[in-house]
Image 1 (cartoon, rainbow, N blue to C red):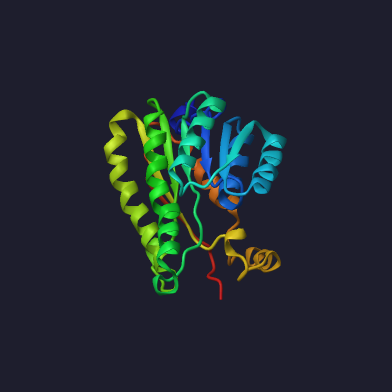
Image 2: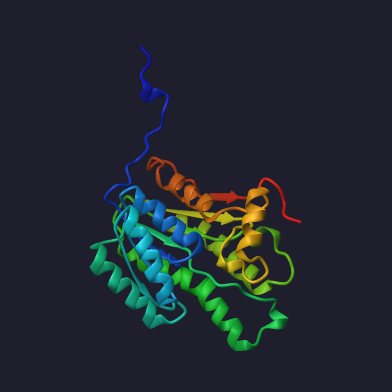
Length: 251
């Protein structure tokens, strides 16, 4: 008889695991939080806007268990507040989804304070959150960065954002090697053109729906599915990089 164990790889159960999701109140982060909660992961999210936090927690509660806090991760004290609150709520961290990011401009269009804020949010906070999460993790844990295809396309008009995402790309590869022996896996997902409030005002909700239906824009939930795939691989398997793109390019 066929032994089905020879036909299927092991898929670890996510139920009972504990996850933090930065930027987990809107867009991709929210979609990840909702999906993981639906699989029995206890989640703790953060975002900058209290109203978005309340709305996200209400949705998470419909499918699972979750808490959260409103913070600005560009501020060192807020990073500390987030991890202290997450530790109290979760009792430990098994999964860290480092996702919080803001749009960033061309370097020539931004002032010095804007440039610093954008880099503090889109780059420095990624590293500090990964550092803080890893310090709290035991063997068998996972860190996943949500980057961007901007690190690959490197188009003009958003050079600060490109710099941050290209930096995350290099960092993730190096960091993965540094903590692999601790049985902490590090993965990077680089989404393409994805619908979210991140795209406002150039792409309002109705335009996003149109492009999604034309297969020219991804849904945030498509990226959440990629995260789930990364997290359900055997411990011997490190899916270190995934690029999720639309089948068709938008005009």
